[in-house]
Image 1 (cartoon, rainbow, N blue to C red):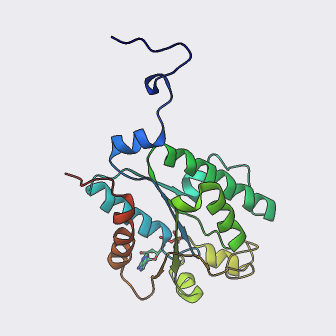
Image 2 (spheres, rainbow, N blue to C red):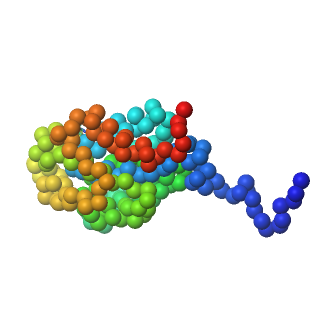
Image 3 (cartoon, rainbow, N blue to C red):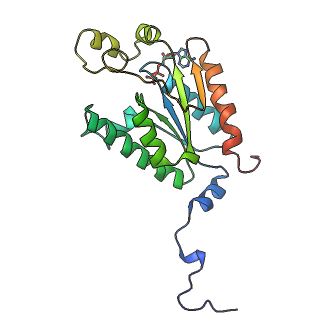
Length: 205
Ligand code: ADP
């Protein structure tokens, strides 16, 4: 048996890298960044995509306000500085998942180009797929899934996106989904079809 020379470390001694983990999971990791107004359908679509991909053998992690703002970012508000820090930390967390081979499905209003560019820069352009979940303000307000529009109209929430804070339509989105014109099923399928060629490493059994 040949001896490994001193100071030469075999890969066995080193930390496993992203590629090793992607091989293990048989998938190519990336981040899908869903952007859009509150109630536009980001979470609904991400959960549907997660279910579809799970059935095909892909491991994903949904990141959204519920698991990020309530935990790691629970000390952040909605000032300009805090919004940037919110996105920066989300992007750093996303990178950790990607380096473990996991596909992340990120659901954040992320209303400005600055915020999305920051996320893209931290995560890396090659691993960043931007999906614009688009429904008119009036439709989102009508849905009012979380009762936020009612509160914003009553003045209980300041700087509410689409009302007294801007939403800048993304310039670099790979896919736009009009959720007022498509069913949930169609919306989920559109994302799954976009993703499958990008996440396939080899044929799944
Ligand atoms: P967001 O995560 O963007 O705040 P949610 O997913 O929580 O939005 O809410 C979207 C609402 O819109 C849900 O009540 C969902 O049933 C409804 N909806 C109607 N059509 C669609 C569609 N095509 N895609 C996603 N959601 C849709």
